[in-house]
Length: 278
Image: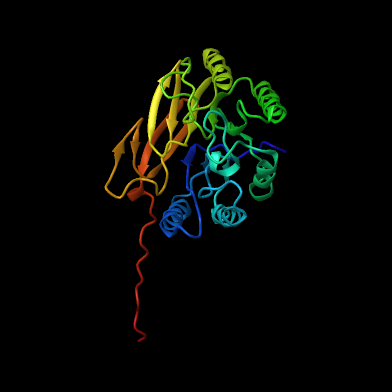
């Protein structure tokens, strides 16, 4: 099965670009803080939009380490791959294009690269954006076919899409073809879905920045990394590069979201009280 159900609850925590490695303790510490935060606050779902591993798509060691780190989560979670996980797409593919060998490694360590869940009047769908406009044309078409079937199965639910790369940088109808966003064919397909009025949210990562924009009635939100901001403090690019995650609250009435800065992603310190025996 490639789709799953969670109980009808609304609170979702979206993280991205953890870039985990045993050789990078600051990122592991940030991930540990995040895990403890989810243990304390118990969100209904954690969604990771890719670049789980540090850098190289072919690093078996980083894969094993990162998969273990995700299994530390004690709440329901799902993940989609990023370019550092399974390879990139044109133009300018970082560390080469996505391959079947890399995709198989993902499946072996993390399971499915796409998923769907019905949550309180919404259909949350995770897609592998590294297949969009990629050399793996048959794999991409199989994913689109699956996506169409899911949409037909839940025709009355509002749609929230979770992918690694942003669908665009400025507007869903732009023709800007750069590594920071998905390819033009996939973008046109999402534009058509937006124009139908059903697509309401596209959540992504990749930029290491918190960015929001609205296009054709669709809210586009890029989650930052957990430990990717410069030590000198937040900087501005397409959005704001600071560390944190995004919290969503889905309901029948709509959607609310907010940025959670790194300082908020901590469980309370537990105090110890020593009582002398009487």
